[in-house]
Image 1 (tube, rainbow, N blue to C red):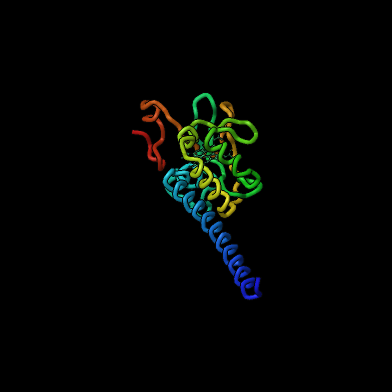
Image 2: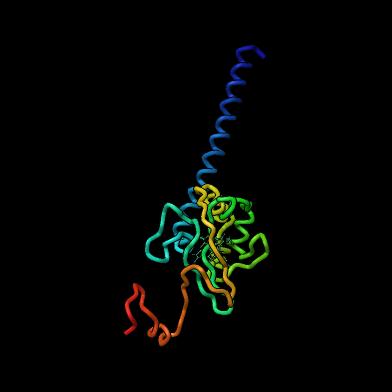
Length: 183
Ligand code: HEC
C-alpha cells in the first residue's frame, strides 16, 4: 500500500469512527427527547411535582415528589414520590431497569407493590423503546433533594395533604376548599 493510500484509508476510518460516535449521541438524545414528550403527555408531573394538585406546580422541583397523598380505602395514603435522580431522596440509586419495572409492573426494588393510583397498568402497554425513553429522561433530570414522607398505613396520621373520595353527603358537611364554610 502506498503511503498516500494508507493515509487515505486512515482518514476514512477516523471519519467513520466519528460518524458512529455522533450517531450514538444523536440517538441517545432522541431517546431522552421522546421520554420528555411521553412524561409530559402522560401527566406524570400532576402527581409527582409539589404544588401540582394544589393548582400551583413548583417547576423548580419538577418531578421532585408531591405534597398531596391519595387516600386508597383500606390501604392508606400515598404521595407521588420523587422521580429525580437524587441519590438520597429520589431514584438516584435505581437502575433504568428498576425504574421501568416499577412504572410498568408496579413492583419497586424492595418488592413493595405500588398503590393502584399510580397508573402502572396503563404504562405497561408502552413499547419497550418508550419505556426506555421515559427511564432515560428521568435519569437526565436535575436531582431535586426532597424527601417525600409516607406512604402512610391505614392507621397512621398523614403529614401531607390528602386527596380522598367521600360520599356527597359527607362532602357537603366538610369545610370547602379555600376555607369557605359548608352551606
Ligand atoms: C394519578 C397520579 C399519578 C400519575 C399520573 C403518575 N404517578 Fe407515578 N406514582 C404515583 C403515586 C401516588 C406513587 C406512590 C405509590 C406508592 O407509594 O405506593 C407513584 C410511584 C411511582 C414510582 C415509584 C417511585 C418510588 O420511589 O416508589 C415511579 C417510578 C413512578 N411513579 C413513575 C411515574 C411516571 C414515569 C409517570 C408518568 C408516565 C407517573 N408515575 C405518573 C402517582 C402517579
